[in-house]
Amino acid sequence: MADNTFYSTTSTQGSWLERRFALYSRGSSVRTECLAGITGFLAAAYLLVVIPGLLAVGGMDKGAATTGTILVFVGGTLLMAFYANLPFIVGPGIGGSVLVGVTLAGSEGIGWQVGLGIACWSGILFFLLTKFGLREVVTRSVPQSIKLGLTASIGLFVAVLGFRNAGLVLANAKTNALMLGDFLSPGALVALCGLFLAIALQARRIPGSILWAILVATLIGIPMGVTKLPSSFIDMPHSLTPVLGQIDMIGALNIAFLPFLFVFFASEFFSTMGTTLAVGGEAGLLDEEGNMPNINRPFVVDSIAAAVGPWLGIPAATALIESSAAAEAGGKTGITALAAAVMFLLMLLFTPVALMIPKEATAPALILIGLNMFSGLRKVDLGNFTDGLPVLMMVMITLIANSFGTGIAGGLLFYIVIKAIAGKWREIPLGLWILAVPLVYYFATLVKH
Image 1 (cartoon, helix red, strand yellow):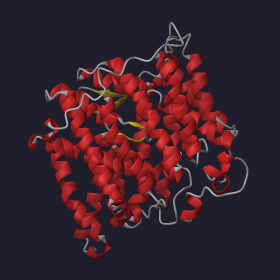
Image 2 (cartoon, rainbow, N blue to C red; image 1 turned 90 degrees about the vertical axis):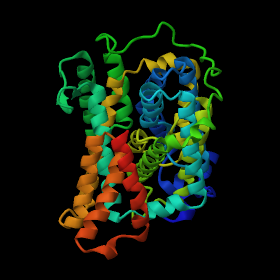
Image 3 (cartoon, one colour; image 1 turned 60 degrees about the vertical axis):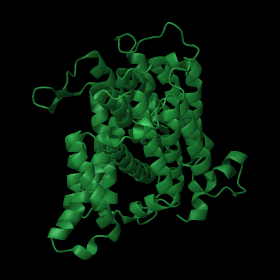
Image 4 (tube, one colour; image 1 turned 180 degrees about the vertical axis):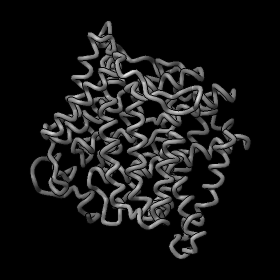
């Protein structure tokens, strides 16, 4: 796909929306894009509950964090719509919120204000690397086999997240392993109903199958006690004052916090790269070599969101893997992101409506999308040991670490090691040799923290 087609806004076909977002050249329609945007919003709506809850663990005001989360979703996703013209939802990731609310403020005794400062510096580094083109250089240095396996690795993460949200899979505290949940519990039954409905609708090629499954599962959850109806469907947003600008940029510069800064930076870097390529692949926006034309545009968006978000009390904003739900529903342009942003904006007044959608209702979407993404493994030459093994290691590390950012980093490091010990030095790009140093440091940091 040529660059001029990818970002073209000069088509004379149809309405302003069609011209502005290159709908004609990407083979989409306003109806499909809006439906995809709503689907993506519903898939990511659970974060409106999860993110403030995680940050509240560290002492942040939960109501203010909810308002901040919504504003970050709206601002970042609108920027993705109009600047990058991509169907990506931008918002805070769970990993960054855990690091600030649970690890730093909760376990390490470091104030969340300092944690936000560390997250902001990470976003600034993102932006500088993007403006100098280094992020694109790193992305293009990633071997083709790793790029092809990215989709499967992220698909595993998404599917496991869906199974856990549904209560079908639990973490066994005694063995530190995954175990089957209670399939007859109300939450699991709601999720299974939504899953079977989504499969039935998709098999019949019914438009908006995932969206309908989420809505029906939400309704089924009402009599089963899973969906909690709010006392009021309209409510004024909480004040942002308790978290607005409450960021300690100077305190975050302490040399002792360097490992935390690198964990923020590396995990978000690889998560963003993986999400962009995987979701872009789902939407059919990659070229023959698995690269996205003008990939710096979405990188600029997520780096700005990562740097600005902490000033609203919200760390680690990035393109979210839940965007895959929008891509699966047919989203190919920024109209998908625009529709999702409008839905999030409405949540400033209708927050109770979004919060009533249980995670069990959105779990089927994540399960189906994740499992469908495993098809990417078919394109990997698993018969070539030195190409296939790093991909399989990447998938396994994603499962073990419960982080596709760590999985991607591990896959790259194993690629270097395996190619080197196999005597295939020339197949290792120069950029990967340079990347090996921070990758080793990243894993050493993970072990300590």
